[in-house]
Amino acid sequence: MASRCSINPSALSTPFDLPSVEVGNSYKARRLFTEVNGAVPLIAFDASVSSGPRAAIIFYEECLKINPQNSQALNNIAPAYYSIKEYKKAEDAIRLSIKLSPKPKYQHMFLSSLLLQDQRLTEGWKEYKWSHYGNNFNLTVKSNNIPYWNGECLKRKKIFVCGEQGIGDEILFTWQHKNLIKDAEKVGISCQSRLVPLFRNSFPKAQVDQYYFKVNRELDIEYMYFPNFDLSEYDYQIIAGEVATHYWKDYKDIKAINGSALSPSVPRQNL
Image 1 (spheres, rainbow, N blue to C red):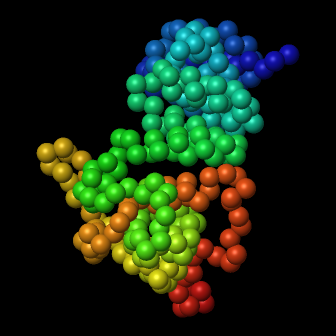
Image 2: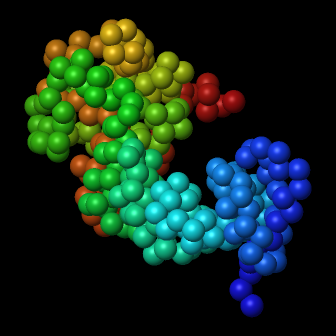
Image 3: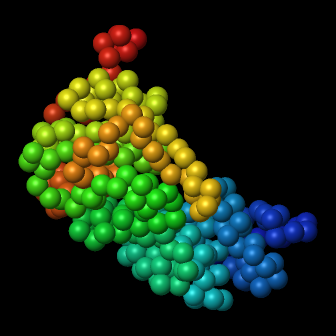
């Protein structure tokens, strides 16, 4: 018999009070969805934490029976499906969520990850460009006043790389920096201040320095600026996460790195 979920909605005084979850009959779950407005995502999250993604899926599926076009439930069930290797269901759910959502940036980012994992790089990289929306990317690029690199030949050209996202992402995105340095006349690499020593030691032929943030008071948007670089000397700019899109156009292009991508200083290596 297929698993269903029963609940104990004791003391549900607000939509933020979470009931306990256990395997059983789904009838009470369906009743709760109709009685407790807005609680489903929280209940499903609690179910996922306490019992794993399969328990959360039961709640989301019940929710979608009531409203098949609930974009939030579709958005949340997609990674749950993916985690149990129901890849087709995950892709179908996230694509429908994208159609129904007024601001689908994060759904596109999940779809990008799903496609890249499935070795569909062309569409996956296209979806990755949605990372630009809703952050400081457009204002940063516009303020730099340099053409954006779209894969043009870099022979006798200089290219500036904007760091982005968190420190782990900035480290991850260094995969292709050595290729850029080999192909271009000059490479400028901006990064968080705490990564400057590591990146300088790893890429001695590039100019490496930190980025800073400014606030555009008129637009109330924070964006990056780079006072330690002479941006006027560069022919192109690109954000770090997109460099790989021009080197890994097909899955067979992805090769193992010989040695390490990053090289800490000798004193650091000897710690």
